[in-house]
Length: 270
Image (cartoon, rainbow, N blue to C red):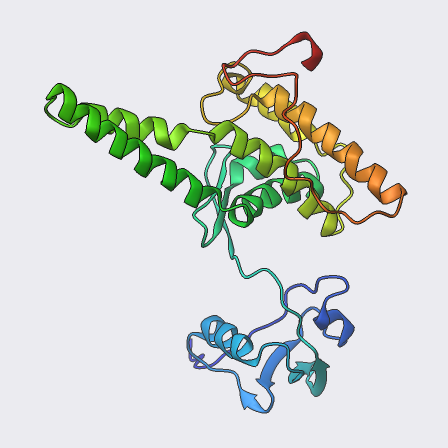
């Protein structure tokens, strides 16, 4: 079409962000950073690398707005560096590999509010912060080693015990890790400014849409228990906000008495 260069355009500005404070607006075209023209190729990668090198040093951003060039002075702040990827998939799921967060369109369809979606993203961020993946891999290694020892003792072939112990290691503490991530993730959403009233309803929707989440709990808590815990956490956070206390999660919070990891619920859960 004869287009050999296009400029990146601002599609949204977060409230209270350095860009908002500098007066940057939606639809502004970004021309240069500290007088250096934006690269015409690999633009997003180039800008990300430039801003990372720049750190928290103020930067002069040259913009094109309504046909006129304007300059904004932006003072960056350090934020979360984990990218979030959106995937079109019906399964109501989200996950992290410690390098990125991926969430499916199916989980977005269940979420009725931004806060509910923020709690899901907070959950995955909490996994990273709490180093759950490293802990699960450590459990897997221990399971594999223990299984190999049993294989040797019984003279089994095909590493049968190694494989089964490895699986058991991966499952070890999985439910506890998920519940801890739910708890901390709610705090992350609240600290990001989201109102958590009704945020637990996403787990009611999960139970209605995916009935298996009501009955089985091998690696994740039952949906009803996640509903109960999220409601309690939201109340806990609201109480801290009323008292003007710091929103700091207690990651040593006691286990909810209302559930066990065998997939059953006590009367207290109801």
